[in-house]
Length: 157
Image 1 (cartoon, rainbow, N blue to C red):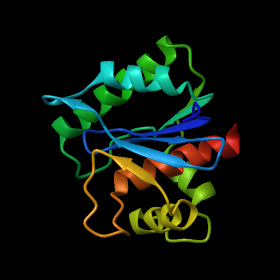
Image 2 (image 1 turned 120 degrees about the horizontal axis):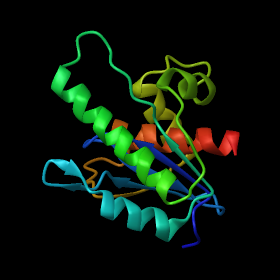
Image 3 (image 1 turned 60 degrees about the horizontal axis):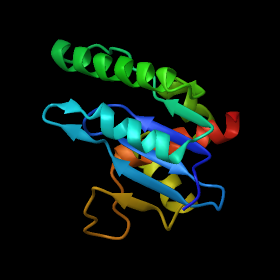
Image 4 (image 1 turned 180 degrees about the vertical axis):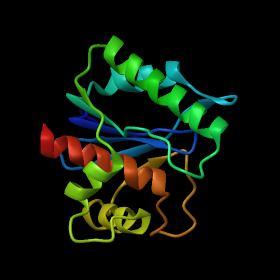
């Protein structure tokens, strides 16, 4: 497969990394995890191998009612990914969920279900690694968000 044009990263251990290719194909990979941490070496290998021209990492922020430890862990992962991408010399964006959803999911409820529907419609042949699909239309929300983030990069790129 050719190198990717755009990459979207939904941060977190339940997140995903998605690549959009010049031929219109999309591929999503379950967030690589090693023990209790995201596997930065594996992510580095993926990014170097695919060499996207733009990477989009979803900006993380705390919301009322979220656990302190889980938000801290998410913040560490977000910072680690930004540092990795910057250190590798890739161009990147870090839009907030509100910003990318406003552009990509325009005219919808802008929720997880809307992102899943968008991806199912735009990429019916989406390839997913690290997931077992029990039904053809089953796409994890982390995958949907990662693909939408890559789409945001495509619009901005």
